[in-house]
Image (cartoon, rainbow, N blue to C red; front, side):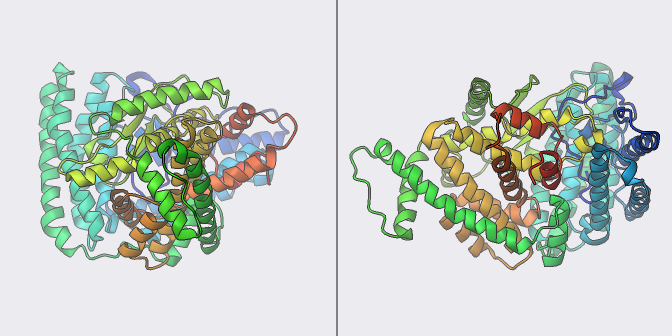
Length: 595
């Protein structure tokens, strides 16, 4: 989807609105209100109708976002990526802001007031994107991501019959040429890292057209010929885009990858839904980084007799002694690791074990929907090691993919070894917790059951990521995986803090590669391959890397405010926390009465 458009949550489950015939989803409607006084009842109904109309319009303007959310009424279309499309989006967005701002807030119930605040924040974020970020003019990854997210669900998700999905896929394949034309006309001086990444991702898209589409077409004999022909036309357009990226755009890709302090501050506040002080937040991340190092020393002392039974525990007189000590323990733990041939299977076994552990300890209600571990598609590689991709909140047929990315083909053996030293058995265990159980997969299943569709669709990234990091803490607290996994969980906290520092210092400052790699490798004990990859991610994205730290620390504040009260239980607390959808942390504090 278009980055400057409102962020639809595509990692969600359990849609209340069922798809109609032919995979089409009816216009979203809001749940019935209770029976308030007449003026509140009328205002509530007016607001419900307005939200439903807004979602329908937003989905028409963002067809790929609609697909991701589980509304399949737009599955044959692409968004208008031209400058004229931006102008139309801006006018529509401004119009919706005015309509929602005119709602008589005092007459709305508490839930509807939250919905109104959530949507207004997203709309204002969208205007900021159109007017100031202008991603479509400089970021080629915007286009490769859009194309991939528009084509892939038609092949991989079983939301409708093969015939219906094949028809939509054919239309979308034939529309790619228009998207490519818009990209070629708009992209000017892109950051070099963005163009390089788009080149790699576009190769994956070409492979999707030339290999995956024909394989899918073979399952639909009646449409095989036309679908393969459309895939050929799409591949031609993508080959043309590849030539443009490599021969035209790359030589003039001298744009600045830094967002700049003013834009970063605005974007981060929109992303978090809170008027945070960006410098204070970075300072808090630095404090937690140092505190967690001390915790890692304690865990490493616990592990030392197991890892080095014949060696005396070394004296730790200063910070440098502790750093050397931690590195020695981490190096030893990293010897137990997967390979490219085993990592997907290992993740599957760990998911089964984590699910059983959550149930045994009665930590939170476990969803019944399936979660499948897959190898990450080629077109989605190059940014993160793993992701959780769940059906949207409006989807009738719920399914979740937990994707793991083996090392890219062509990596030298030393770099492959470094990768798996970072994602050793303990770290892979923690990653499964974060992405699947009881992390993203579980939380997003709860999210999709929330009756307010606007709040389920507009999931807060800080809440989603905050819960995933919190779930790592929770599983470690109860002993999942023992001290080796606890050590890796603590190392992940270092990574989370460094993520926030990178985000701040790259986009609101002038951090260079040398300083970034030093921060990650020397202070967070990351392997070189992981650090190099994160340096790339920090330049490709902005504001997202901070969501982990902010979301987790805010979620811990909610827990600390409530866990000492009579009758507190893990399951009841977590189920209540997850029952309000995925609101901003500011709204979550209000919902839990933890302010």
